[in-house]
Image (tube, rainbow, N blue to C red; front, top):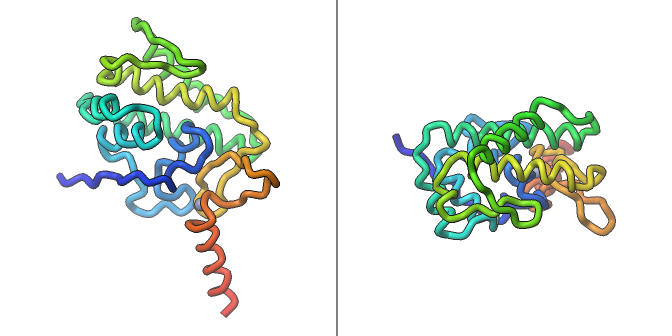
Amino acid sequence: MFVDHTAWVPEHFIGGHPALDLANAVFDRRNPPPHNELFNSAADIGNWLFSAGLANETDAAAVAEIRDRHFLGGVRDIREASYALFAAIAADKGTPSEPLGLLFSHTASGLEGRQVDWHGTRFDLASLQWKDPAPVTAFLAHLSIEAFFTLPRAKLHACPRCGWLFVDTSRGGKRRWCNMRVCGNREKIARHRGRD
Ligand SMILES: [Zn+2]
């Protein structure tokens, strides 16, 4: 089967925190097209880690080579949990326990029986650990736990057009779109059309 590789571009990394960029790793949250999935292989995940600046080229290549059949599904589960958690917080709906629990449990199983180093609030995985699905999955799950305890919740928003999440760090606090060019312009065009 031919599998398309996702070409990650800077527009995929507009969340202001890697946990939000992970939650945004689908095409559209609000109006999902038939092919909404951007994580189609371990290579997509390795390339994502590299493009996000979370892994160097060698470590990202090790992730791309992971052949464990549960790895891709586990990472997608973490992404969906991260989205459920932060979308609820962005909508002032409080903290849903189920996705938070899933993130803690994936973090815990990656730590079990392994010595993992820390760099500040993040895992500092050794080269060999980037080949191992459990610590890589735990690394990704823990990004959301870090974000849960550190992000300014009042500044967390969802793009009204595509549902992507971001932290508004603009000075005036008036950012509305994931990306003005991508969604802000589409909204303008739609409004113009609506007027005709
Ligand atoms: Zn958007």
